[in-house]
Length: 111
Image 1 (cartoon, helix red, strand yellow):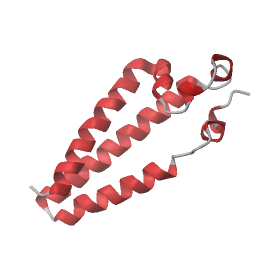
Image 2 (tube, helix red, strand yellow):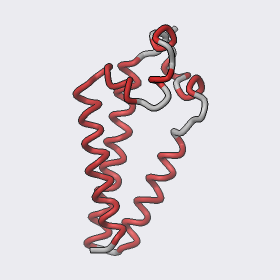
Image 3 (cartoon, rainbow, N blue to C red):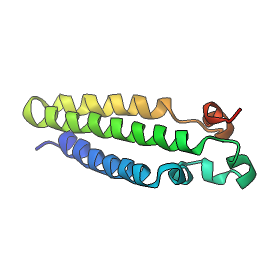
Image 4 (tube, rainbow, N blue to C red):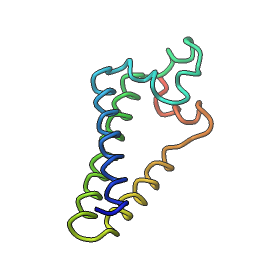
């Protein structure tokens, strides 16, 4: 087993477990989202926490599936399959990273 397969498998398990935590906590899981817990309680009330938690759960689950498929490709076909999955995951990850919390949660603002 090569290093790419091992990394993909470990990350898939970690992201799968975190997505289950978000599924179990439902809207209370929004407190686990980086940047949201730094907002004041008044500001947090202006955002749809249920939708935030569902979106985070779905993203983590998608990452888990992507990395698990990368681990399978890396193990059975070629080690480059695992590295390709890691590159795709990095693209998806950095697409969702925002330095400003207000900009990051803009789409979850309640009307």
